[in-house]
Length: 399
Ligand code: ADP
Image 1 (cartoon, protein in one colour):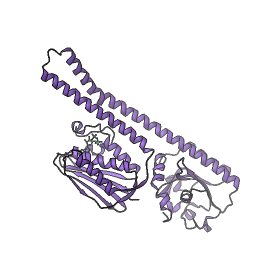
Image 2: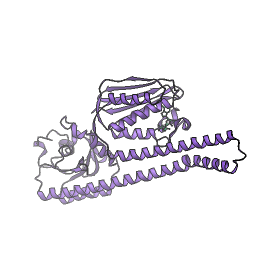
Image 3: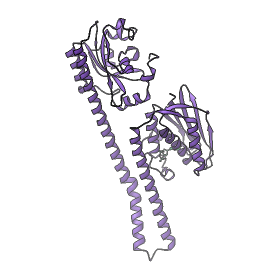
Image 4: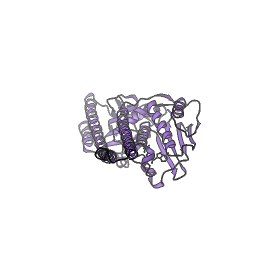
């Protein structure tokens, strides 16, 4: 990547929007191929591309007339990309002769892709993020006419219509998946306690004279417990649906993680948790992030570490800067997770080790945590040993 391009190409909001299209690494589709075929034919250019510019490569959602191996690979490194410049400026990039053009004369695209003349229109979404470029390429110098550029613009806006439609379909599929999950929870996790509550109440009503006060009290306790558990589940499901709504309104602000962690730790200390928290953190570690989401990530991981270990067992929380990343790590000496089940803990409604009784939730916490971290272009890893403890480690880009 050219060092002057880093800021826009690596912009977290742009990259998140690009991932959200679901187009990166997706199979070719006729809807896009039709537009590149048309561009090549009408403009008379041997190559036409729908290029999505990622942080270190350009991926071709559609490719027409490009040489091998690039046509089959459907991507090139940025060293071979003119399109990155259209993304960087957000403006049309019209090049008559790349060999003498100051921006691209050194590009590997000239010798390796045979790119000499180029006309590219940035693909800009409704939030102003440039996702890539729709372009035509010729192997000899060429003066592009106003008409040709106009046609290219029209086709580029058809590409964006396809991208929007595609996002809507992905969104609808996600809603459908969530609806199926919700039905599964309602039919299993909510139906069972509800059946127990109704059965107990019916018994209390019909047998009120024959039941001892102690037994009646046990029934009431059970009803109270089950009711509380159901309320907790409903609240978690609402939190999850709020998380989905928040995803569309994610903020990108400067957040100093050190005082934020301080506040989170304080809330645990005054909130009745008994596990000693051992904290190691620098005095300042600023990243660009959504503060509310990161706070939820920290809270959730520390809460789990306390929940799934003995109340007197220490939990260690570490924040550090490593290789231009912020690393946040929570380790406990608790019950740990079965090796074969580690991979499932981030899936929605997954509660491993038969922990439902300790959990008090429905297994959505880590699913939301991972979702928030991925929205920040970060990663989360877990290493755990049954009976020994667990380490959850989050890595977030520092800028
Ligand atoms: P829950 O609401 O059940 O805590 P989570 O999504 O936060 O849901 O976690 C999913 C499951 O992963 C938990 O039910 C638990 O079995 C396991 N888990 C999470 N954190 C830990 C931990 N620190 N130690 C052991 N098991 C854990």
